[in-house]
Image 1 (cartoon, each protein chain N blue to C red):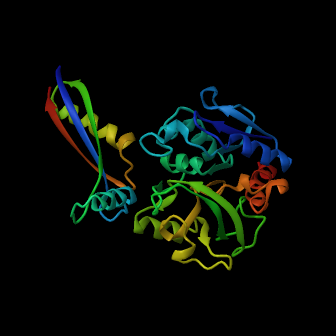
Image 2 (image 1 turned 30 degrees about the horizontal axis):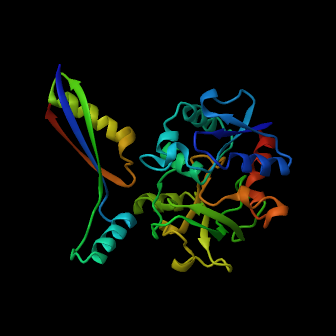
Length: 230
Length: 83
């Protein structure tokens, strides 16, 4: 199995993702978006960064590049797709997941560790955790405020598609622990299939023991658990 | 075919927080201006040729639907003028 990490002009967390996956023993390669997805792709990372300079809206341009049609097709076939930060913005802009990530409530770029509460543990991305677990993973974004209509948020909650919420160290979700004003404190969510997920925090920056906490490893291991079933 | 300019204005839906507009408002207040509220919008001026104003509007609508606006957070309107 090989996880394809899609590099757009302006992606800058593609190498971090590759390093983190390889540390976990998951084969990964960076794929230039114009080259299309390799046939042996068994997983897809949409990495962080500033694709197309965040022109128009973060993720808007990359979401409409030809490779995203291939990504949507692969996602529909059950290939696991993980969108991280700018990749999460691309995921929402491309319709892989619902809602939108827009300007932080603070109107500032925020780069800091945050706590996330695992909202469900029965997905590939969270099988390493228990429901209600609190993990620490960094954020680094200016446009990470999750926005969606109230009725659609209620529908996502009813469908159990919220994967992570911002919380405090004890797992309490309140205004103070919500770093960017995200509606419902949503930090990450699932697409139509449980094999498709996006999140604003960076699990690949919390995966190497040499550089800090490793709480993000379990999320990346989602590629392993899905590959076993494919 | 007639030459038109379609002007697409994209703005946040009412009720969606606009931190950039709020920051801009505060900057104006720091400069001594009095104002109650400030809303920002993106405006795209698209030159195109079409059989009719309706045809031009239809294409500009589709551009807004497919790229210029994000229906989750935006409303938009289109105005068409002969050029």
